[in-house]
Amino acid sequence: MRLRFLGQFLHMPLAALAAFEGLVFVAAMFLAAMLRLGTLTPTTFQGSQSGLWVCAAVFSLGTLTALAALGLYSPRQRSDLPGLIVRLAVAVAASFVLAAALFYEVPSLKVGRGILALSAFFAFCSVLVTRAFLSQVVDEGAFRRRVLVFGAGQRSLAIASLRRRADRRGFTVVGYVQAQDEVIAAPKRQVLGANPGMRELCSEHRIDEIVVAMEDRRRGFPIAELLECRFAGIDITELLTFLERETGRVAIDVLNPSWLIFGEGFRRNPLRLLTARGLDLLASLMILMVSLPAMLLTALAIKFEDGWNAPVLYRQARIGLGGAAFNVLKFRSMRTDAESAGQAQWAQAKDPRATRVGNVIRKLRVDELPQIFNVVRGDMSFVGPRPERPEFVAKLAERIPYYVERHCVKPGITGWAQLCYPYGSSERDSLEKLQYDLYYIKNNSLLFDLAILVQTVEVVLMGKGAR
Figure 1: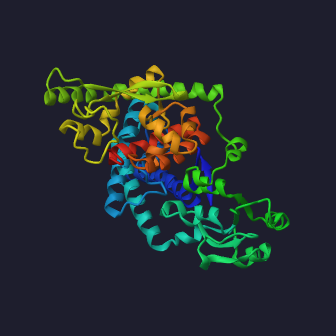
Figure 2 (figure 1 turned 135 degrees about the vertical axis):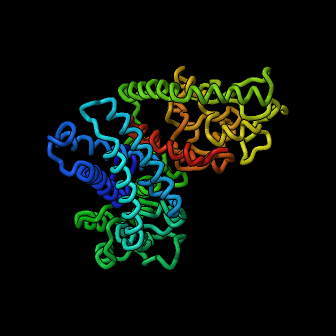
Figure 3 (figure 1 turned 90 degrees about the vertical axis):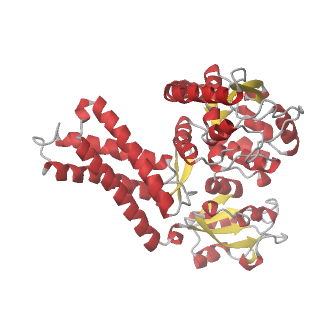
């Protein structure tokens, strides 16, 4: 089962884990206070006992945010034990620093460094023990929804062909039901027959949800049987909606225009535009203040390597909102003659055109920082589809359906596709990333943008997808 939160569908087990660990973090601060002070009475605690509740809640919320930023509540997280320890240590350390700064600035929330340090230690140990225990004793399959797919033709392959473990984490396909006059394309061992009694079938296999994936609904659509199942408490879901929910993307291979026209989402009202612009300006100011030293050092490093007459910034035409072209700004990471032949080229892994400084700043994503000025100027947003070059857009729009729809919002420095899919350097990659872009455009909101910005921390710190 999944819970919709911040524009994303969350697995209930992960949501329950986050809620449990949030309570554990609150308890960690109370335990730390007891060990340091011996009691929790207002006369011994700085402020009051109610003040300790506030401090504990702030610490818990900050730690949960840090864990989410490092991908520890993501269904796509596959870290082994050493990877978990590193991510957890970074998250708890970040939470400790932020909480210490906040408690210092707000005297009414003042907590001693000893209490805060003990709280961080207990939080680290509790998460490590909890996750190690759950990995050994909890059967993940017990939380999956049991799904029956009505339709065994080509459209059903959109479910059968899902390969990523994260995409299949929330459900188990019990079987496929062949619709009238349908040629079977689904795995034959899972086909349960040609339109058997749906209600009895659902009772026999304990079905939680029926996904309608038949080829032609104008022929043999079992309205009466599906209604009977629906009134019996079984969810009935259309294929595209199911795939969107489970995979976090819009499946183009089974997409039809009516789903886009009549479906929910794709809202761009004035309030949404205002909040997006406000977030862009606020985030630009904050990141510019923090990153200014790194930007100055990067400029000096480029000059030292290539000479004082070499350009620091690289300007390149990209396609933005409404198909309009603009010049994106980046720190130059390639040789000045990288495209001397005049032909646009995709970036490659270990690109031979990159300079020594360029390899470093691209790995750390520092080369993207000048795009902050594109955001301030209004050419880009912080969150949105990645802007592509005009030469690539012209070719991709001819070959990929719905590609131009990604230009109905401003391009972004980071985005849902950048989080969910590695760096795209081919037509196939562009098709895959477009599906995530369409999901973002459909579900975009201020809270979804904030969630993406938090999760971008993991991409930057762990170097995911950098080239």
